[in-house]
Image (tube, rainbow, N blue to C red):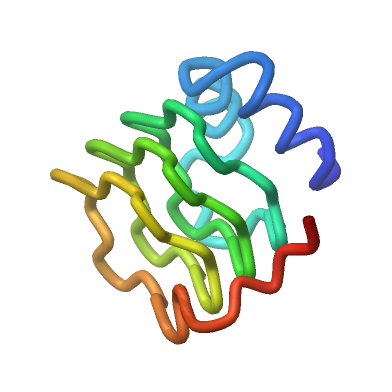
Length: 106
């Protein structure tokens, strides 16, 4: 599945569909899914599994990532302003330069 299809699945089908897709096709996989520069601002993503995804320069402004799984996720230069990361697992996530340079073109 291509990056655009990943984003479409998350935005239009929701967290449950995304998590089911990951369990079916990527269970136990630790290679990154490319979501670089994804525009996911303002979404309700509580409980989403974005483990080992590459979200470099993604726009997650005002997204709800409550209880999200972000294990090993690359969030370099991502916009995390006003993001709810309560109870999220960010073990091994790379948050370098988050909120410094958002890299998202509006």
